Amino acid sequence: MLSRFLVTIAAGGLALGAVGSILQGNTARKDQTHALEASSPVRLTGEVLRGQIYEHEVGHNMVFRLTPTVSDEGGGWVIGMLPLAGPADEPLEFVEVATPPYHGYNQRYLGATAGYSAREAVAVTLRQFYFVQSVADQHIASEVVNAFLYPSSVSDDEKSRIRTESAGIELGSGQLHILRSRIAPGKAGGPDTIAWLKFEVALDFSPSITLQSVLAPRPAPNHR
Image (cartoon, rainbow, N blue to C red; front, side, top):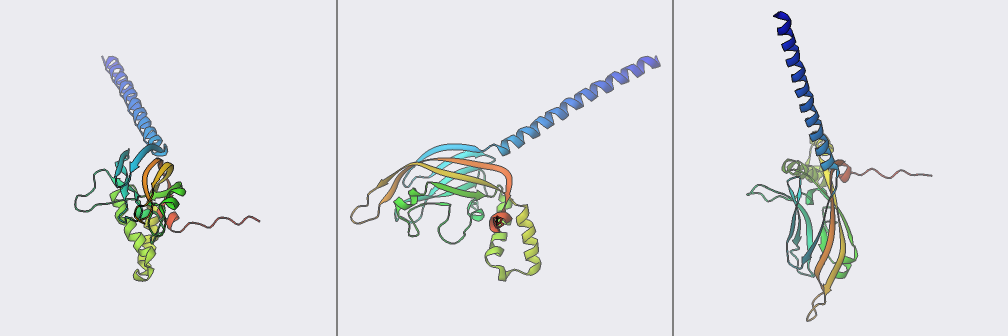
């Protein structure tokens, strides 16, 4: 009787071990899937007319967005990444805080503004940009960037803490490539405008870039 009881326990142990192995295998496969999703760039192709908003859900609880520029000099858009479900009382955007320079025209802009004509804007066919990947990181990054831009307003202890935080904020990166564009001639002496764009976008969510590396990039090695 005792032998039969021990055999039953042993069999149960083997069964539990097999179940545990299966669960561990499933967990490992899920981890591998998540890692593959994070490392695989998201690609999309779109078209947009002057004055229109373009939006596309890209996974990772985010939306890629082209927002028409406020200035009406010659039309255009601002590149953005938004949380899929952001706070209703606090509209958030993830590219602005992660893509320097922070004053003046930068890679976020795809428009005839800040002295650039419509033709000059679309002549630069590639835009490279970065973005934080969560609402929490956006709040921390805003504090880090403010301290970076206005260091005299921050104590030495705060600077040390902020340097550490900036190294811990992992950024995604993106490229927008203009495939085709159409310029509408200006009327009554007005400027030409960007009437239409066709573009492709590649978004990389893999954790290979930090906010610290974007704010203070290391100089290229001097090979002699």
